[in-house]
Amino acid sequence: MQLFDKDLLSVQEVRDLMAAAKAAQAELAEKSQEEVDKIVKSIADAGVRNAARLAVMANEDTGFGIVADKVVKNVFGSYNVWQAIKDMKTIGVINRDEEKGLITIASPMGVVAGVIPSTNPTSTTLFKAEVAIKAGNAIVFSPHPSALRCIQETVKVIRQAISEVGGNPDLVSCISIPTRQATETLMQHPDTAMILATGGSAMVRAAYSSGNPAIGVGPGNGPAFIDKSADLALAVKRILDSKTFDNGTICASEQSIICEEDYAPAVRAEFEKQGAYFLNDEESAKLSKFILRANGTMNPQIVGKSVQTIANLAGLKVPAGARVLVAKEDGVGRGHTYSNEKLAPILGFYTGKDYKEICDIVCTILRYEGKGHTFAMHTNNQDMVEYFAKRVPVSRLCVNTPSALGGIGGTTGLLPSLTLGCGAIGGSATSENVGPLDLVNLRYVAIGMLEIEDIRASLPDCSSGICVMKNADAAPAPAAAPASAGLSDDQMDVLVRKIIEKLQNA
View 1 (cartoon, helix red, strand yellow):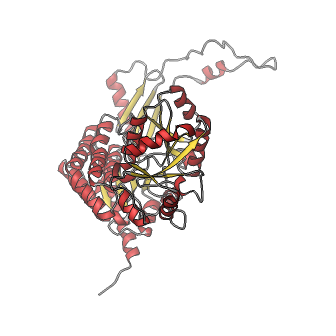
View 2 (cartoon, rainbow, N blue to C red):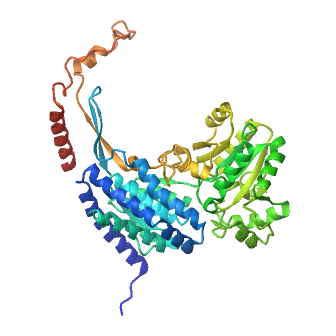
View 3 (tube, helix red, strand yellow):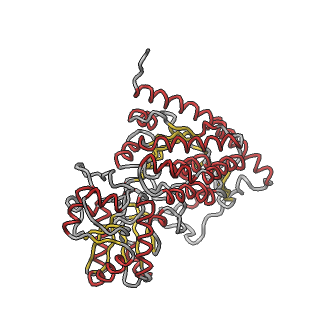
């Protein structure tokens, strides 16, 4: 019997998947917007039909989160995302600006590499498949090993949905032998046009160092500021709803709460009234040993676990109805465990003497971990919102809403997304909630508007040694009408089709 090396098998599998995906994407590139949308809608419908079954599998495979909440995430990643993107123009001509003589054409990138985390495995798979295909691309997934079964099943659902409407199922595929070499091969493959990396910091760094374009999203670590002008009971409800949703596995969820010193007793009382358990110093020290591993990364033993499970792990006795564990924190950085991201129902508790000091603390927390991601505040003072918005280093500031659901666009007007860009400050290529328009190249057809004489005529008069603009208050009129002048809409369409054909054949 011949034995094969697992790493070599996984690398060969990636090569085979990429070849099939490339061929499928070439077929998709010939389809109309309506045909592409038909495929994406079929995926969305299948995601909803299978939301409960996939949620159970994700929970069984990883041990993370709450099944009912994972159902919500699966529906969000399929139906809600589809509702947000269904009317987007992503294929062919997407805009015409007759005044400027510009025609914008969306061109698919090709094959996308999708890295899937264990915290939101099925919902992220549904989401990435939809946005990739909506943009005219194929996608090959690299699954987290601990969530392999549920991710593979999600891909099976997606491929079936594509086949049902006459699409090529190879538009979506998944590595079945997840190894480090397989992921590296996928990210570095010459036919990989874009990497969508959702996962830990090391994974994101690997994506950006692969040599291929990448959109990576780093950790969240957002504090939640409760201002005195807020409805305190409602603010606490929203924070607890957010932090307990799927046991805190969404990276936009609150990681700490902060308020003014003299307001702390009232805030604590309201949190306790609604089910939060505040740890004493001894309990806080015990739990802190289980939040991070020796290398400073989050301990997977607490990720997505219930309060009772975490308490048992740390040897704590907490009330049976406790919803979250809260620990007072007075610093940021190494040695201050509660200042880190905690994808679990655990919150740090900070205070400041006034809103200015609070803003400084918030900025310090985020610059330590989570910069560019998400910050939440609860206030009815618009001036306060503007003060923080100008200073806090995040890409999304969620006001008066559960941050976990607000950040992903569930309870706010942000684009529904399960990949949240952190901008340059967070080491990401975008600060957007990632969607289909992040996965297309834009080609501009630029029709001539001016001649060289018009450019020269607009130059300043420098004959005296001091340059003075000619007719400074009036823009130069073009010497000739735009090249498109006099063309009917049908003639323009013929011109655009010819241009697109030349671009595709180039």
